[in-house]
Image 1 (cartoon, rainbow, N blue to C red):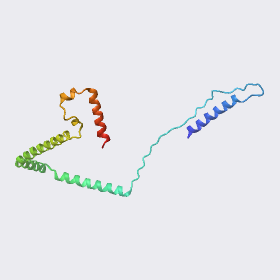
Image 2 (cartoon, rainbow, N blue to C red):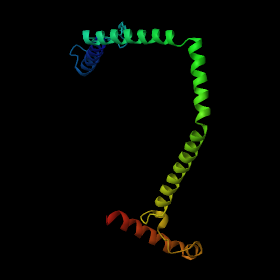
Image 3 (cartoon, helix red, strand yellow):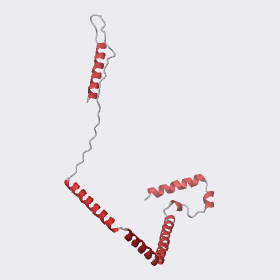
Image 4 (spheres, one colour):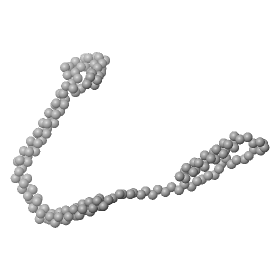
Length: 168
C-alpha cells in the first residue's frame, strides 16, 4: 500500500518537472527548480505468518480414540513381553526352525529356481519378439551387416522406422 503511494508521488514529481520545462515563461525569468528532491519514504514491512487449522470435533474425537487405543496396546505389550515370555518365544522359534528345516530349505530352493526361470523366460520372449528392433535384420549375420555400405544401411533403417511407426 505504501509502495503504491511512493510510486504515485514520484510519478507526480516527474510530471511536474516535465511540465515546467515544457511551458513558456512570458516574464523571461528562469524559474529555479529543485531537481534533487529528498524523498525517503519509510515503508514498514513486518511479516507475521499465522497458521490456521480448521479442526472439527470429529477429528479431535478420532485423535483421542487413536491415542487411547495406542496407549492400551503399549500397556499390553509391556505386560506381555517379559523376560520369560521372550525366552519362551525364542525357544519356540528355534524348535520350529529346526523341526521344519528341510521344508524351509526346499521351499527356498524351489522359490529361487522358479523366480529365476520366470525371469529368464520373460527375457527370452522379450528378446525374440519379432517387433523388437534387435530383430530388425535377423536374417543377416554380423559379417553380412558389416559388409552392407553405411549409407544403404542407414536408408534401410530409416525406411523401416517409418514403416513401423506410420503404418500402425
